[in-house]
Length: 301
Image 1 (cartoon, rainbow, N blue to C red):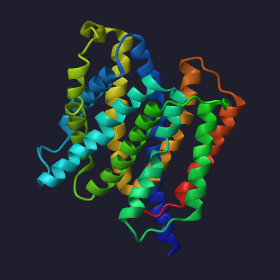
Image 2: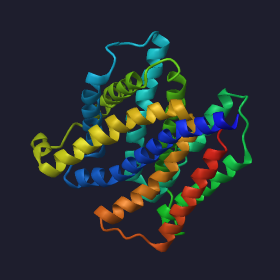
Image 3: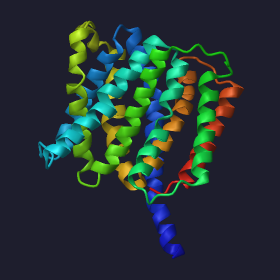
Image 4: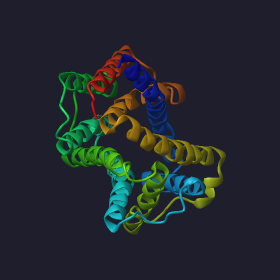
């Protein structure tokens, strides 16, 4: 019995390492996005190019199957493209333009809690362990410490904060739906659908805000490198690995790794944007790491 448990632990270790690597990359995307926006690209323009590149990159590796097995499943794929793509990124970006980034980052980082609620509501045989609640609470406190960095006076904008909650809810639903659809479809097929429907459902936004970035600017070295990083690494490679790992580790366990993104963001910001790491940021990062470890020990999905 003990040998079986040890073998299972070793078998899932790789996917835990993959999850940590993915969130490290996603934590660095804010740096790339900021560089592109400083060059004049809007946040929605960055998203469209990013997902379009990812879609083109995944085509050679994706099954030739065009549609899902049923229209119900195809609609589920649309939902994945919306919750993990267009609506998630656009609500988050709109929120940043209305309220403080600190507020948005903290609220969006609560998405694992939504995933946990969806999973527990669906799979009623799963039990909520105290260690899961304690770990999640510790990680949330750690995120607050890292993001607020000692600033205790917050000015809230109701509309911006509601958009942030919508973004967090989107990602929570996405992780849950990937788990559900992963039992029926190949992870690469699902990821291709996410990219396609993410781009497709973002097109209506260009009706209200037409494309403004000069396309010749895409040929600039810095712009091209950052877009390729966002499209090929942060989207194509990371989404595939994330979706595969969800099927191996479960939606709740994987979504808890989202708590690590602020840690990666702080580190990459310090390296590339000359934003220093403070003692408060270090303590918050440590709290997040411990919280994620405890939350994952309490997962049973």
